[in-house]
Length: 475
Image (tube, rainbow, N blue to C red):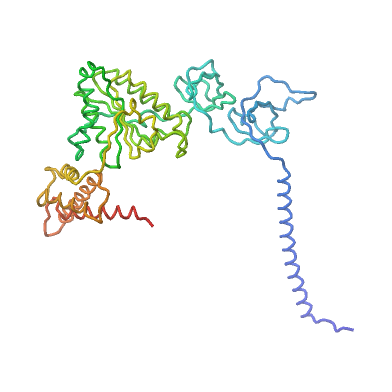
């Protein structure tokens, strides 16, 4: 007969059993949770997928269908794919949630079981006129007129010229869209820049004057010869070499009266909405024609900067293919400009190889002028325009300019010199001179005159070279 266990041993065994029970309970709870989770996953996988539809409206005055149909069963018209259907609505969904244009989820039997969100996409169209309180005639981006229904929130809120988003397959206008206005892509100004403000481009200026200025200033001579002025000029070359300044100088010199200059921000013509970019181009030329008609003696210049951003070669596969519709729109406008003889189109680009060839042919952008990097003599002229007699100089002005040129054009530290780089060098030198003056004026004993020195220019050129090297040798 085994010896009875002592009280101490019994207590130890009880503790061990309780500990084992706790571990076992924890394992069972974990297993149960995993089983529940797997069951939920299997249940979810067994549930049918939900389809999406768009509410078109609630049928009015419709009686229940079939025997015993309850008056509490609600129905709604939806767009399902390309079909319009009348479907049932689950009891838990409130009728106020089912507004036209609302996206819903459909369960078994195409019953509306969930409300998702409001449709936020669609084709854009322009309102021509309203018809009654719930319909409108709109013009699509192709010019086609459509009669569409209006969702309740648009009724009584639209006027001619408004833009609406459409669900085209249902001919339903769901939202009024705020489009980019003309002034957001075009800066209308009267340039004050003259040829005297452009340094180092004497040959290019003469080309422009011969090609552009003569037909406008001496209209009678060209009329007698039955010679039309060029419709367009393309200025191409590296960045920062004065293309925009030249375009403004052309506008300034075309007439004694102020010339209007429509400066189009090329990249901002791009829009995610179908037909919006073309509409902006039409607006630009409509505005140019209106301004030109007001005063036949006042030339109007339409300037497209960074043309390659918008008017790329069609079918090149190098962009989103928006150019397939934008380029023809510009071609149409250019071909129609001949009716107004005092409109000039000037384009600027540093990548002429990317522009659609149809724009480059004679009769559109007739004149093409290369604006290259300045020679050493041209660069000296640009320096003189920025370090003119009104700028205080510490030393000989020409010596300071020659020092800057020597540093810029010395191998192997040569940077691609442009008018913009020279202007930046002079600005750096002036800033350094101002800083030295202010530091000494705030308590230092040795006073320093407010003037640009040789050291300032050398330091500025060194900074420009270092900045260029750093930006072109990123590891």
